[in-house]
Length: 340
Image 1 (tube, helix red, strand yellow):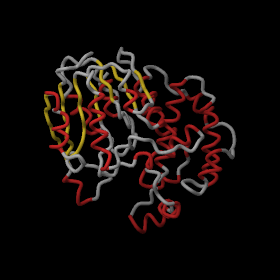
Image 2 (image 1 turned 90 degrees about the vertical axis):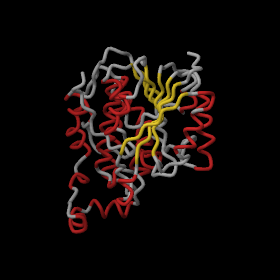
Image 3 (image 1 turned 180 degrees about the horizontal axis):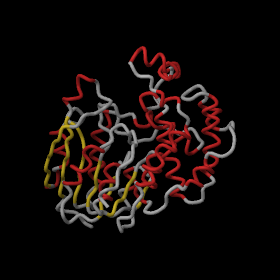
Image 4 (image 1 turned 135 degrees about the horizontal axis):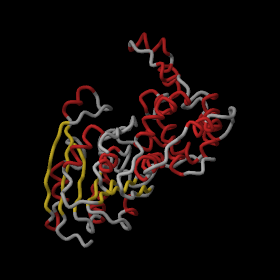
């Protein structure tokens, strides 16, 4: 089972490189783990590979699709017939054309997105549909300079000009101008092979973390919230993908952990919601707010045992001068009063 490979996701803040290290810290009596800010699902995927029962949750619709496709889904993959159906038909003016033509993609590309969305929506199997949207996420990200949807249109056009890119950066970045279908098909095998059954039943949720924690049961909860004070505008980076999935302009979500003025209160509230769970694992880094000592004190309240581990971790979106100064911090908490 361990040969299964996590596919290319391109998710800012992804823990792919240290997911194994984090999983190594799970206590021996853990059978079910809840990844409540699952993001690109790298930790959930590693936990599933190791035989745990996994509960994955994220408030972004596109991350929920990833969790449905790669975590909850144990069997269903996209066949050649499915893919041919997804890319059959002709250009269509719809939601993306109306709202995002010449905003993030050219008009003809938005018309492609509209007809592809219509075809994906007609898939009956929810896991096939989730895989298709996950592959479209990959395709849309590959065509987007810097892999996030916060770039002005004039800059997008400039960076997608292969001659400009070559003159400026020594790279033509031709993949920005490949079709959605080309990117989809190039990544199809990698996503299909990532679907596997570890003998457990998994769940994927699309909820605010405070609502989720009221109704799930798990031996350990892994928390990887946005790191306050760093580049953590996940709705800005990926909200367009949520709008594409839903064919509705999505609004920024609450409880986003971006505001330094609110984050301590959010952490206190979050810790209060963790009381039913025996183990808590919290990822953070050494330049975020609140700092290491403040978080450790908050987590240790009520007599909880707190162990702090560190590992170097390079954040791709960090400025060059800061890349080597960042360390990933993992707080491992044992709650002696868990009431499960």
